[in-house]
Amino acid sequence: MKLGLTRACFGCRPICYTTSLPSSTLNKPQIPIFLRPPAYSATSLDLRKWHEWAKGLAVSVGSSFADADNGPDTNLLCRELNWLLQDSLEDPKHDIRQSNESLMLRTSLDDLYHLWKQRIEQRRPFQYIVGCEHWRDLVLSVQEGVLIPRPETELIVDMAFDEISKNESLGQGLWADMGTGSGALAIGIGRTLGTRGRVIATDLSPVAVSVTTYNVSRYGLQDVIEVKQGSWFEPLKGFEGKFAGIVSNPPYIPSEHIPKLQAEVGRHEPTLALDGGVGGMDYLIHLCSGAATMLRGGGFFMFETNGEEQCKLIIDFMKNELAGRFCNLNAVPDFSDIQRFVTGVRR
Ligand SMILES: C[S@@+](CC[C@H](N)C(=O)[O-])C[C@H]1O[C@@H](n2cnc3c(N)ncnc32)[C@H](O)[C@@H]1O
Image 1 (spheres, helix red, strand yellow):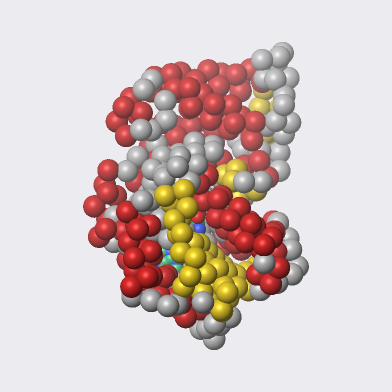
Image 2 (tube, rainbow, N blue to C red):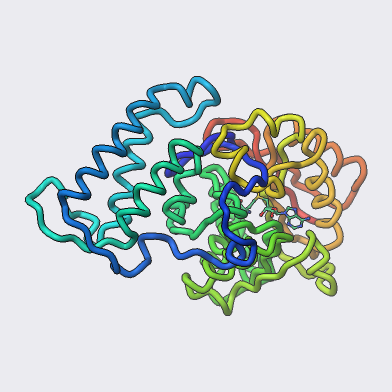
């Protein structure tokens, strides 16, 4: 996970719900704006006034967020403003500069003012504002309490696809996505498996379980993906030695780095999804040990890390502490050529 956010690229994260919604509401999946019915009307003149006001706020930001913590600058905020407008219009291609007709919206004009104030004044992530993230070929629902999936994590699905293409039996087996968040990896791999295999997606967070269940059903994968709540391998009791594949992008940010994260991440994304303990390795080590027990012979694992040093530590741990249990251990680079993932095969 890199430490910043855009419609296709972000920053990193703790649990600090700045919203005043009650926790029962937070656990319910929120419908992304673009999927809501066009139940509100506004004139294009009023929408233009909102757009001018919102653009003024975006321009006032300049490079101040970027200078402070690598946050969004005016250019990016203006792009986000146009995406918010498109998601809100019944017809996303409608040009609001034309005439003064009445338009149908998927969220009210009052909400649009409120949401954009949150974006600028609270640095609420754009993805939480619109309620979704474009990730690979998916549009996933996201909300407070669930990590916004990052572009580099897409590579895990590509690697799973490559392994399944080379070894048919992996595609017919059982896979696990540990710490599924929005369900991104489970859904990406579930679509690769089709009806041949199955995925179990687990998460400790009830919000993540609820959002993943919603995303799984939106993609019609209920027969392929089972969503279970619980801590790491605890919901997988009884499946020891049964998995053809295990993937995870666990919390791996060292606790000491959390206070320095970009505001969108540090103030709004869940600490539970970010904080990997002192040094960031607590959960990765737990997952490595669990993979030795849960994978079948020939089973494949892929874990995302904070990069470089964590990859080396994991490979050393597996070679020394889990000696003889794994082969083909590799560190794999991300789009920026940083060693980001560790992969290996259970002997
Ligand atoms: C970095 S996020 C990854 C989310 C998603 N897989 C992705 O790549 O977008 C880590 C996830 O691990 C979950 N998690 C944290 N502690 C956990 C635990 N003890 N057991 C299971 N999941 C946990 C968090 O709730 C979060 O959804």
